[in-house]
Length: 112
Length: 115
View 1 (cartoon, each protein chain N blue to C red):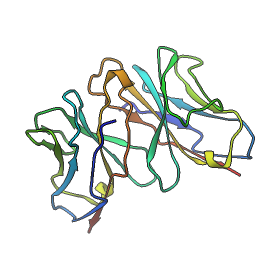
View 2: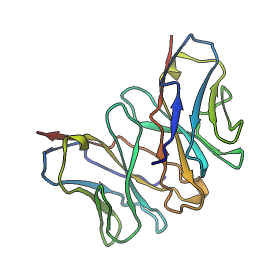
View 3: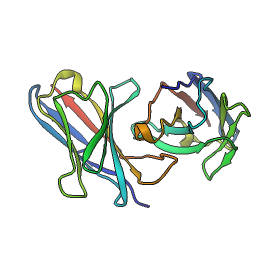
View 4: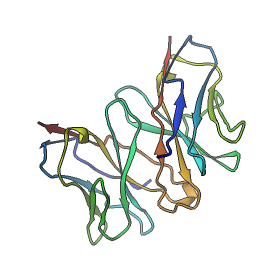
């Protein structure tokens, strides 16, 4: 399985941007980079995904390095509701039913 | 917005008893998954299900576990003889067929407590 490395925790102030790094040096050419988050006492929630190009959606932006060995999830203006564990996951493709292999993730704390 | 639902939200059982955890995936989705999360640990993949059969399972998913889609809407996880170490949050997820990006939608989970 291709692996990812994330910092254990990050802190941010409310309404400031948060940049969450992820290293995935063994990524293969067909692996999608996915981000999910898990709010306290809830199930995981899809945030964003990408393959090669940077991506934006209503929740966040994903910046992917040119060599695809790292990526950064950007929360543009953190709110208290964004306090969660954020997981960077490499999609394992159709041969593995796109199952998700979760790591420990990054615990994001947002200060009011 | 469509969502995955799970029942019950909390199940308490005695060791050795059978439990069935129920999930209603999003209606047009065709890939289904069960994951579990032991308290304080990471989310672990258990099994994936497509076209009325298991397509992949993890080492955790041994003979005590089974899955079924009995009526075209529900997706169930059965544990035949529960052990203390089965205590965990169990999450159901579903994915739309043909979605190459593999986005999964998760339910709120069932907390299983084995005494």
